[in-house]
Length: 124
Image (cartoon, rainbow, N blue to C red):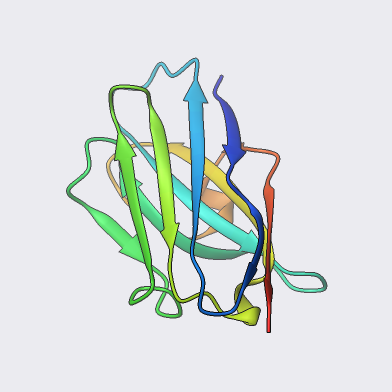
């Protein structure tokens, strides 16, 4: 069982930055990845980025790869999402997720464990 808690969401103007955090607890896997997804009102949940738990391997959605950076701290089992040059289209609830295993995946169904989400609103 894994518990995830996101933080760092809020309201920001277009062009601004936010940093999201996802703290994981009760981890028992030998290898895993942590991911960020987002869901805007009336839309399906979509992949944003993911990172292998030891770092070094990442995967990004094309829509964010030049603006967002995913990272993680092994010391406190926390993943981060640095979001720069934010756009109104980035407005969504952002969710952290974890899956066991080596491969980086971008499908929500590949992730058994999810946080409650944090709201990000970008005003124009």
